[in-house]
Image (cartoon, rainbow, N blue to C red; front, side, top):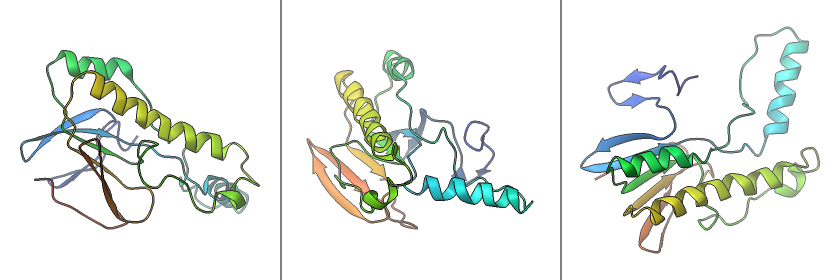
Length: 172
């Protein structure tokens, strides 16, 4: 709801729906959220524990938190003549750093579908990349977070920037 209903709307901080396009410093930025929480089992347990203790429910996990491939919206963006050069997502395509998730072995003991879901999350972002490239978009930058570290790499002429917690960059 925060993003769909744009519940945060400050001059320099806003929540916007997935597939929103923002113009920043001459860049055309496609924004898509969503990522799978490695600790979703723990988060679900905490929600249940709070209910048992009759405490206020705090949403720390959402079952629909993974990114969605929306071919229709991507096609509409292209049909409107909008050329995307920058992408901001929560997670990253499957060919970007990191190529493996740490601490996964102990997590799948309680959450057997986690490994499959994480793979699907990254494949969705790869499908988005492939669709944009096939439609002639000239992607220069892809920014993402989710992995709690900082990293920059260039793949096929695109700069992929993984931002750490509290790390900010200026889009120029």
